[in-house]
Amino acid sequence: MENLETRLNEVARIAVRLEQETGCPAQLMIAQWAIESAWGAKPVGHANYFGMKMAHRHSMCCTVTTEEVVDGERVKMDLAFADYPSLADSCNDYAWLITQGSPYHAAWQKYQSDHDLPELIAAVAGKYATDPNYMNLLNQIACQGNVARAITAARQGTSYTA
Image (cartoon, rainbow, N blue to C red; front, top):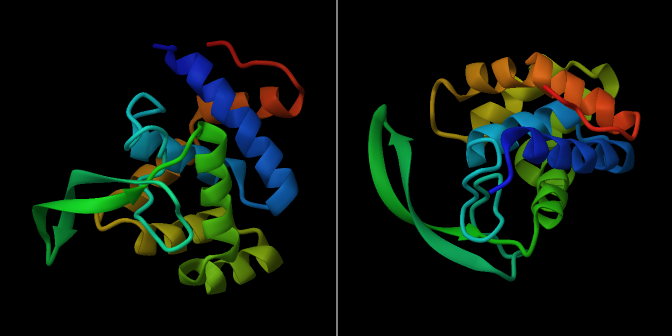
């Protein structure tokens, strides 16, 4: 298994490319990747690194027992999740969801005008996950030094080393 540094460099390269192509912030993508896949170590299925639930646009899926927060209580549920052939495909779908998906349309439009990343994170977190602490964790990871250094290295065409 690859180490954290290798996984972080790989997702940072993809996130920086997608930020250039779609505008989806690399910090947001990496933070959600980190939370949803234990820093890339445990994707759902083969390569769902964002915990994306199955939708009509997906051609691959898997059923997973997951823990959701419903009415303030943690509940185990068997849910259908999307699956992908690769990390890049998972990241592409995530960027599409944030920049074009209807649940995030208003937040994305606002971000396009003000580039307020903490506000975008708050809006995404409120719809993306049921955990009430998700927004705080997402903000913490998005602002971590290792995430910033990996993004900077990817923009320079190099790799981050701890």
